[in-house]
Image 1 (cartoon, each protein chain N blue to C red):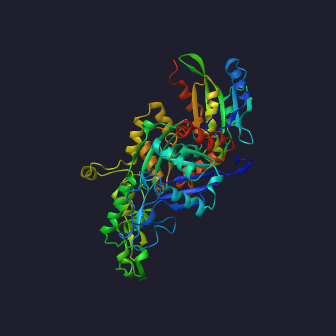
Image 2: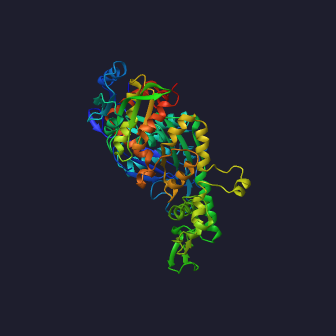
Image 3: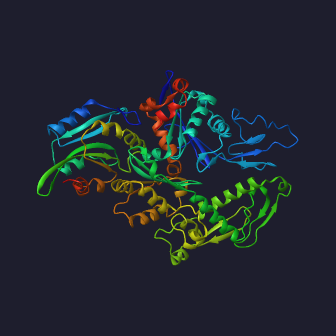
Length: 426
Length: 140
């Protein structure tokens, strides 16, 4: 509990990822509200008056004339609705929709008044000084928060594992990263990250399309009849909706269908790739929104294998291939001195929803013990703890009574301005 | 002086460490957090140089810090090195692990002259052999 103005008030914790925005009370073991980071918007139609001249930063808004945020935002069909995402590589690239997203998750979902609660926000290790200052500005100026702190997700994950030093392996929806944390601080030169999850998603999509599977959004399906495995699906399309479907909405839905398939079907061979082993694993059945259902065998493991190994022909055909996890780890360790490498290998922390594939942790262990004598991996078994490790770390940190000395208060913000963010949040 | 958590260090932590370091009054000190998790305090001191006795003090499922005055033989001579332990077993409660991890720096910076720091999550990482291996590298 934090004492503010004589009353005990819980702090809020806000963790903005590529796929979702997580918010909740400090001290809780899981976020209270989780909404998609993507939002729907309908662009102003050409016959409306569009004030192009006043496109200044002072009025922060999502794109478009009308926007749709939250659980019922992007996922519901609306004629002409497009999908926007303020994030790219887990950095906020477009601050326009951020106030609306924050307002939705805090006020509409959690039903709290942000001007009454200190707020701790998370940031990735490669966040820019401008970005964190902007976040502070939005919190103080738009939401009138009484106090603010921004904490690094790598550090929060390390602390949540009970460690001061660790090598954090974090796989999210768009980025896989390896972050060395030493005595509670990120070792910046050792930060390595790539768009590996996007490669995995692209491969999964390729597999599904190669099997002629239609990824049509279930919102466009009027009705369907159950069919036997591998039989053509029998479903009726909502023809009336088709003219209103935009490319970005359809893309977003298809991405979600691919992700859902990957999460349910994807697996990793613990001992490394082996055709025999992949065939021996039992195939699993999966049903798509159209009603089409089939069994997936080795393809399931081809998807997961991309996290750890890239075939030479794939590397040769793609010069900008995102680095796989063993490559990210070795690049990260190269920047650390030899003694530190041993410490880090004894304290590998695995986090992020992208690490929940069956076999992920065992495979990582097997890859690392080949090069290091002592490897210890800390991977929370509880999926909530794994998915929201940074949020949880922030929740515990902000709930400590002694943490109050680090908050940047509104008064300090007014007095010192942006400079205080870098000074206080190291 | 404090870590990111804001937890402070009780003066006894430093005084007793000085007595261990300069006057050899103790062989080891066990540190813990007070009940309110606001301050680091001395939980126990001992003059037993038996490493096994010391290991008994690191509880299952709970975090502690400790300083052990580690004696060993090298090149026919007897040496000693002050080792700092951050003990955080995996099955400790997540909140306790978090407070300990984010407060360690406060204690660690208050103790001058530590030669080796050991982050331990299971008995193998604080075993006699493992620590001996760490203290003897780099000692001439």
